[in-house]
Amino acid sequence: MTAGAPTAGLAIETRGLTKRFGRQTAVDGISLAVPRGSVFGFLGPNGSGKTTTIRMLLGLARATGGRIRVLGQDMPHSWQDVLPRVGALVEGPAFYPFLSGTANLQRLDAADGRAPSSTRSARAGEALERVGLTHAAGKKVRAYSLGMKQRLGIAGALMLPRELLVLDEPTNGLDPQGTREVRSLVRSLAAGGTTVFVSSHLLAEVEQICTHAAVMSAGRLVAQGSLDELRAAGRRQVRIQTPDGDAARRVLLDLGLAPEPGPGNGAPVTAPLDYHLAPERIVAALVAADVRVRGFSVEATSLEERFVALTGEGFDVAH
Ligand SMILES: Nc1ncnc2c1ncn2[C@@H]1O[C@H](COP(=O)(O)OP(=O)(O)OP(=O)(O)O)[C@@H](O)[C@H]1O
Image (cartoon, rainbow, N blue to C red; front, side, top):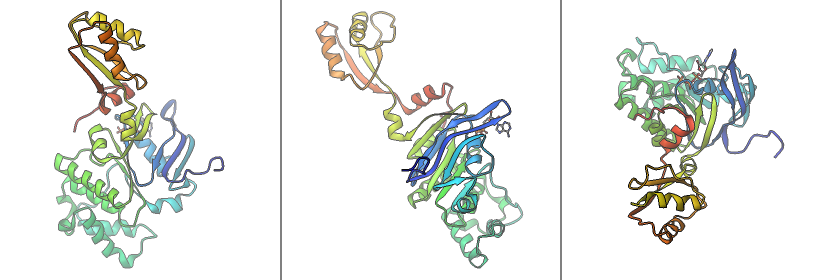
């Protein structure tokens, strides 16, 4: 591979992508790698730089530094080739409330110079069907629920065939029913082969719909990979129930572990466990030291605990 050549199989690739607003660095040198065919969750608390990143990916904001490749081509340089292959929903779609869903989609499509007018009506019908709005096609948009409006926005992004969909917080402000509708729509689009890049501040949402994720914190990318990789990178911890807490802690120290300082004997003894030490060695060492082991477990830290640790702040983990 020549230096700087796009990595095959990536729908989005950034290197050192940076955006400053005055003295503030909103996006700080991030290198994203979004595999084609993935549902990629772009996760981070409010204000961590997700929207700013998405705006740069789509050529809506200019990067201060770094490079961006979308579908194998440089952005914003190749926007004319790239953007027709990308559907996007950023910062809530704007619709005419007094027009029907169909009429809104047709107007939107008419504004796209590449969209053939001869197939406009059929394409609007298909897009509405894909998002489950056929029954409301003739209804004025002011009578739509928030969830329906959001799905109409996605239908707008689907008026032409897309290789990549970019959705910025698509369930924000939706009630539980609307949220379920949008999540299941994202899953079905992904099942059809479209790469979906979706930002969210909700860990539970990303766990439900995504195959991969990246975690942003204060403008920096603090982790990325498949959900399994992210889980595996989390720490494990060993927990020992014993009346001989002090002795157990000494055994763990001898094994190179760092037990949490305990209140003495009685309370469970815990210590972070790395992957190089087999749990059975710990049990053997405890028994050899005459520690009375009444319970022994190895617990994986959850993705939630890991993300809280990564972002260093109270993560919004509401469903
Ligand atoms: N046009 C702008 N001018 C100045 N500062 C900005 C601008 N746009 C964003 N910022 C700042 O950049 C930081 C990142 O904002 P951004 O909207 O990208 O975060 P986010 O993760 O998308 O959060 P949210 O979910 O709240 O939109 C914030 O501190 C924000 O105030």
